[in-house]
Length: 183
Image 1 (cartoon, one colour):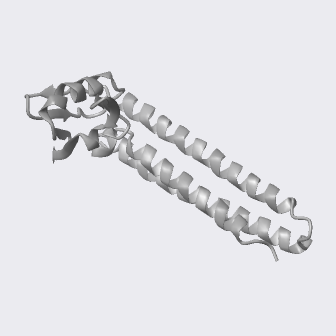
Image 2 (cartoon, rainbow, N blue to C red):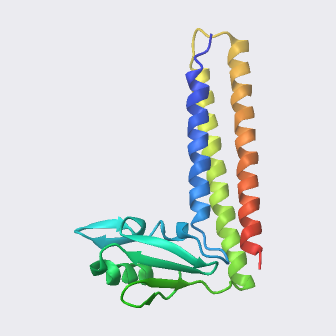
């Protein structure tokens, strides 16, 4: 009997890879504002680097605007500077109490660039899934006392798991691409 933990371990790693891709794609800016865009930006506050969502509440007054309201008003300039230094390409508007980020509509060229970026992230996730499959199959091949037909069945099972996860990544990418290209 082959240890089922090999398949479970591969399945867990594949799920984490899929979740990671979903988070990374959520951080890609589309035509509308979303608080996930700010997840990668850290601010120097209280002697360490902290994510904006730990220093402020982030609201969406409308589809193209984010409003960032710091818990401590002393951090407002640090948050503003961190946003300016980031790769968002958006100039924050600071009124002393709230920072507003207005997202302009994307032009065709920028949409295509963002779609390429999303495709690249998806391809990297697929490579990661294939590496997980390879590692699981290598582990199966190293089993000395397992019957050959059981090893083959377990390899086929892991291949099916990979195929299912790659299909799901394709669906996630297609949804993100549609969202990016939407005017």
